[in-house]
Structure formats: C-alpha cells, structure tokens
Length: 477
Image (cartoon, rainbow, N blue to C red; front, top):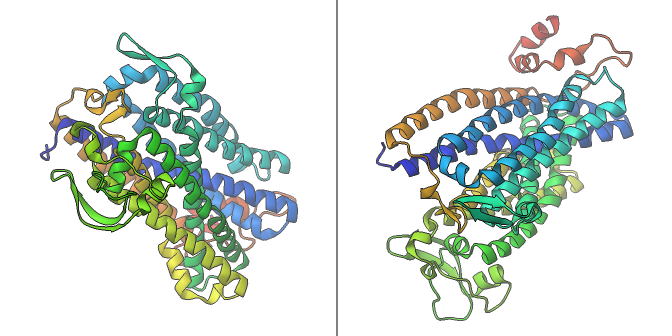
C-alpha cells in the first residue's frame, strides 16, 4: 500500500503515534515542576499572583495529563501487534523497565493527582504542596525508566543472548548504560524548555491583545528566566551527548553531518547545509567550514570522524532525513538562547511589555520546544537504523509478519482517529489558554465553602468563558 513495504509502514505508524504522544508527556513534565514552584512561591510569599497562576495552569495540566495517558496506552500495544519479534527477543529487559515505570511513577502520580486537582480547600496546605511535588517527582521518575529502556536499545549492555532471546545479567548495567545519563538530562531539560516557551508564548499572546495583569507579567518573566538559564545548559548537554554518540554510534554522527569520507585535509569540515544523497554517496551543494566539524565533534583542531563510506551500505542510517532534523533542532535551540537572553535584557531595561516585536517573536516561538523535541527524537531514532537494538537486532527482523495492506489500513485509521481526538483535545487546550489567568477569579474565601474557585476548577466552565458572553452564564451555573 502507498508503494511502501510492511516494514516501512510499521515504522511510519509507530513514528506517527509516538510523535503525538511525546508532546503531552513533555508538557506534563514541565508543567508539574512549574506548578510545584508556583505553589512553593505562594506558600512562602502569600502573593495572590502565584495562586492565580497555579489554578490557571492546573486546568491545562489536567487535560494534558489525560491525553498523555491515553496516547501512551496505544503506543504500548504496538510492541505486541507490530513489533512482536522485538518483544519476544528483548521483552525480558524492556518489559520489566516499563513495569517499573508503572509501579514507581504512574502509581505515585495517580495516587496524588486527585489531591492535587481537587484538594486545595479539602486538605492542609502542606499536604497539598506535597501532593503537587509528588506528581512532579513522578513525572521525572517516569521519564527515567522510559529513557533507560530506550537508551539500552541504543547502547545495550548487561545481557546475554540465550536461545535467541536477551537475558539480563546485570540490571545496573542495563539501566545505567553508556548513553542513559546524557539522554535523561537532554530529554528532561528539553521538557522544561518546551514548557517555558509555551508559558511565555501564552503570556505574550495576552499582552499583545491588551490583557495585561500582574499574573500574566509574572508568568512571562518566570518563563523567560527559565529559558535564559536552561537553554545554554541544554547546548552543553547536547555537546556531551554528541561526544557519547560519536563513541558508541559513529555511523549516526556521520549521517547527521552528511560526512561520507575523509577529504584528505587535516580535520573534518563542518557541513552547514547541503543535500545528502544516499544513492550517489555524497552531500550535494555542501556549504562547508574547514576543521570546524572535527573541533565541535571531537574537540580537536585536527579531529576526524568516520565517514558513511566506512560502514557497509546496509548499516548506514538515512542521512537525507537526520541531516535536516538535527539542524532543525540545533537551529531552534539557538533561537531559544537568543529569546531568553534578549527577553531578560528587555525586562531589566523595563521595555519588555512595550516591545511588540519581541512579544510577537515569543508567540511564534511557542511551539519551538515541542518541534525541537520531535526533531531530536527523529534524529536519534532514525539515526539508530537499521537496528532496533543497536548492533544486536535489526529492525527488519523485529517487525511482525503483517501485510502491507493491513498496516496501511491501520495507519490510515490511526491518522483519522488521532487528528479527530487529539486535534480536538489540543484545540480545547488552546481555548483554556485563551481564557488566561485573571486576578482573584480562581480564588475561594479563606473560610472555604462554595466560591468562584470551585467553579473555575471545572475546565469546561473555564473554556466556555473564552466565548463572548459566556462568562456570566458560567458563573450562574
């Protein structure tokens, strides 16, 4: 179907479902920690602004969390339906790691999520803050187990192969495999960045429309400060991750750089732009900077990296794709650094709120974090090909024996259902964002009892308030 093989359709289907899924956990990770910071600031200062922001972003967190859970369940089933041979071969490692994620992270999140969402005036302040922090910790623990499983597929160790199946021999080596710490830090920081950009873009959108209040200003400043601090750190982590990848997956680095062979000059050139051609085995129209590739990738002036021609054709990743996905990720990362630095400079000068050009740029950068995450995942996963477990199990030997017609039909169904369900969900999230935090409207009298806070904790009511004339109707309900 579509002129593609069953293997290609299975890969596209998994890539499509994980692309939808990853955006929700990324925002969940960042928002959970952001909510923890907001509640801590409220408890320390009693500044109503932090309380208003907490209740506003809590609604968005709840909807996003639900969509992340649903999209993750579908992905897990694909291991058994489309990748049964991989599951049979490596299930003794990937299965327990995913089970540990459920036992240690999902139960923690689920156990305290109800208190976090509905317990503001039903439990003590300390218990509520503990619940928010527990959910945030749970998201990071979940990330840890998922990244451990994925990293083992890239840099496998601590196992033997017995009767055609992987058998773990050292769980510490399995979990703390060579690429694990770099991937964990890279993904966690990426989630914080994506959330900070989302928060800043939301505030900038309101400011451009004249909706200016202390809560909106506060979330813009907090987001810009986060970006200014974390974006440069992410660049350093990315550099360390690149060195690790060069050591353990040199073919991936060669494909990312569009580097085919040694050109006879000292040091590897950095190809800024070009068109990698897998058939002609060259990068056409390459714009190069001599030696810079070796300096960045090997940290040596005369540094050399292997070329794609050093590897058999059947072992080469598709440079045509990863060459550009990597540059999208890096380019957006540079824009994030500039956004954070310029934003904080404008804030210090007192001109941030009047600079409409910067605010428009901030709105445009809103989805940049999620796009960079997707580009990074495409780079690392397509760059691992043709292996499912690097150097151990090929992707062609991992796929279930379905026909191309079967996989093509299910792919079409996935596309239709996902865009209908999650497209609606994302649209609903945007409606919640358009409402914006409003001073004192998410509060309840200190003595408790029914008040506007209880009404606003219903996301449907909050979204309805975004429609003209709906606010008074919502309050009467």
